[in-house]
Length: 271
Ligand code: HPA
Image (cartoon, rainbow, N blue to C red):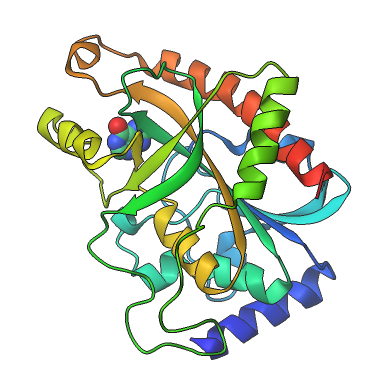
């Protein structure tokens, strides 16, 4: 794997000449942030050695290099999911590439179901912590000491300092936000009402099918993480009776992406 990582990182360095400080991973329907980046290179995943092409609709599948908030950034427009059939090492491969390119901070976003009954559709939830419900850990197997320690410490998985800054930025810009725990599970099925209830009992506020593998690999590599869930649907049994149209969801995601973009951009400006 180190060989593949080195090959891909060398290819990207040579191709872009960029030294990004910050990595960004954009979730389903949340690619709008890319419009704010002064793009110098946009590479289709299929054109990058050892990368996989993203198979999900609403995921563009491009690695973007450019400038945002005065910093060099590398952004994934579309990510790889475990449910697509990729092994965990592949799902999290781009995070390791970002590390080799030099990032110190990773900002992630995801579309998620809202488990907390106080949440509304379109809310942003700043991720305070996560629960890993994937059947596998991306660090399972022989540890590559060069990448990080055998037993990574997870007490501050999401940077308290970035969470604090993001809350202040949201307040200053009158953006409604929640804070909570994200539970990542394999999908591709959404949860049954009983499963949603179980996740709530376990202490989670939002649920989705991504983020956790990427964050685990990032923390292993000592990368500082910050994440936001965009609440696209509510999971309370009474709410689940109301049909949600695709149009509504798109609309909500689009609007929420704008709010999320403000937070990401200003957070980067302040780094
Ligand atoms: N469950 C899992 N993943 C999701 C959901 C959900 O309710 N909404 C958006 N992604």
